[in-house]
Image 1 (cartoon, rainbow, N blue to C red):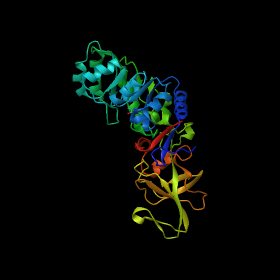
Image 2: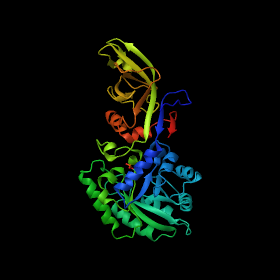
Image 3: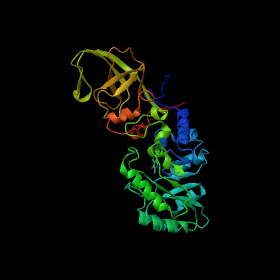
Image 4: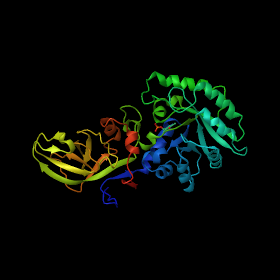
Length: 363
Ligand SMILES: *Cc1c(COP(=O)(O)O)cnc(C)c1O
């Protein structure tokens, strides 16, 4: 499919809603007895929060990380419970959350004072987040016991659930995974928490037998593998985002020609080079090295020279290609996992990093 963005640039992303829907189905096949909290923070990982929410209509709840996101979802009629993953809030925010079926995550003792002011008529369903070894957000075990006791007897609190987050789920054999899971289950054992949740995407894939009552996938819903060196295909996931553009110039250059800023790449033979309208200001990684694959008319050609703000250059060799031909920077046949790895980053950063000037075509 070819599409012309209205802003006279050639780069655009295609979002495949059916792929997101399919990926949710895959999650429910992996963990049939767990409820699914579909994570759509960061504008649905760059796919469009509303687009994702619509495609994820079969999820049990959503997770976002701001009240603005909640307002957007509620104003458009999405009425599932929403978990607020890492927001800051005061007591007014909590009362709003209670009224809007939003479930805040309690992660610091400093929040006790705010919760103590909660309206008695509130009916908050909240999460207690435990730090079992991630060393980021969450209460350490002793503080978590204190908080659990307070929350379970606090007026205005309807239910308390507990979650933790694995630091190494993308590396299933890492010994800290089972340590964290054990420590969380031991913590939770004496309480009557309404739900327990440990697994993000990588955990859902790697430790499905240990899934709790709720899983919290983000990445896999967008069809990207969460395992180190893994592929979406091997998990029967369908990538939902394709970053496309066009060749805007094709020309022959002789051996020895320097390509791009810094003249860091020099043609080692006469060749045809193609210039593509897409650069780091669109969200293509600036550190993508020469050799990063670009799909031109269904054939892989290497990126050459530095990525610049609006443009990249490829070595077309004898590939049949002319100005106006479509190129795929990443998508189903050119995995974003590979582009990320070669660029020294992770697929999460690439899909979330598409910039506002890039039009989104939802199919
Ligand atoms: C973002 C997030 C997730 C989802 O992580 P993925 O790796 O994208 O599946 C799950 N849990 C928490 C607490 C998160 O912040």
